[in-house]
Image (cartoon, rainbow, N blue to C red; front, side):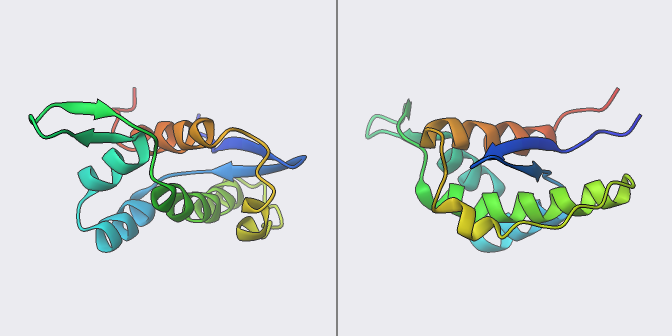
Length: 119
């Protein structure tokens, strides 16, 4: 059975999220490194003594990842034979009805899914 996109409920609408190589490629081109992006999305920064500390996620990473993962989510549903009309994700960002850190966590979980072995 093929994996399905994760569904994000925003403002009463379902947005499919999917991270794949196309998303990873755009992340790498924009942020220079996949690791840098992940640290921004997860809110991990290195302090002056070289230790990693948890901070809040970077808005830039969330605003970058959400539309990309939604675009790929709609494509993945279409490949699974469930085409849906894409929502204007960027307009939905204005009305996000969940805590920012929870949204970042959902996007980070989807991002990490790209790097786990499939059984």
